[in-house]
Structures are given as structure tokens and as C-alpha cells.
Length: 183
Image (cartoon, rainbow, N blue to C red):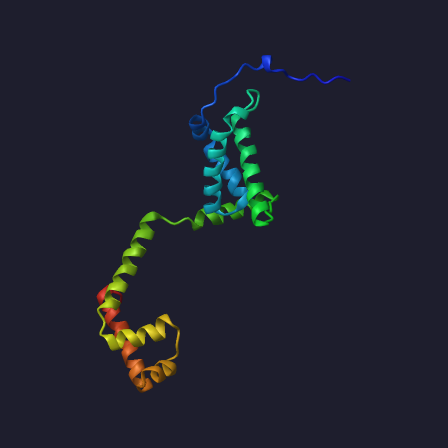
């Protein structure tokens, strides 16, 4: 039995445009990488590395190879190299139902930029309201809320009665709530 090998003459040289194949196959490539890593930020980093590697090794592209599979091969090698360097073992989810559930959870966790902006503005208004508190209230709030100390520990630290600590925390919260318009 003989195996016929395809020779270069059967496949004329194709010019490959990295930008074009990235536009055509980028989404599929990103999904491929994400399914290997299960981490969006790392997947985005690996995607960029794959494109850079493809640009550096364009001369290795064989005309008979489909560009998408060529990029996926590069992605696979990049992921293996990262795993080797970090001593990481990646797992694959073989069950399609479980994979879809993980994908849905991932997509549900992606936040709307408007919500992110709204939350940042809200936090800025809280920080602004906190900065305008009297010094003794700020100190007690910082100790109780930010440092997680009990009222008794804060009272001991500032050498004031525990009732004063409770009063300052309560008044500070009310002032912040009113300045931020929380009801």
C-alpha cells in the first residue's frame, strides 16, 4: 500500500494576510483559546500572543493548510508553553451541556460598561462624602468599617466610651447616606 503525498506544486503558494484571517477567524480562535483556559483575561492575552507569533512565523504557513487551523495550532503551542512555564494543568470539559452551562455563566458575568461607570460614580460620591466628615468621625469610621475593628476596640484605641463610638459611626453613616442620596 502506498501513500501519495501532496506536493507543493499541487497547492500554489497563497499569500496570507494576518489581519484578514484575524477578522475572519478571530471569534472562533478566541473561543478555542477560552475553552482551553476558562479565563477571559488570560484568553485575551493569549489571543494577542498568537497573533504576534503568527506574524513572526508567517513563513512557516503551508499553502495546503487552512489559516484557521494554522492559528489554532499556534494557539495550542502558546497555551502549552504558558502551562509549562507556570506548571499549570488545564482541564477540558468534554460534556457539551456542562460546557454550555459554563459558557452561559461566563457571559452572564460580563458586566455592562454603563453599570461599571455608574458604580464608579457611586463609589466616588461615597469617598467624597467620607472625606468631608469631621476628623473624629472619619477616624472612628475608618477603624470600625475599613479596618474591621469592633466598637469596643475602637473605643479603647481612641480612649472614648463605646457609646460615643456607636454614636459617631451612626451619625457618619447618616451623613454619608444623605450626601449620596441613599434612603
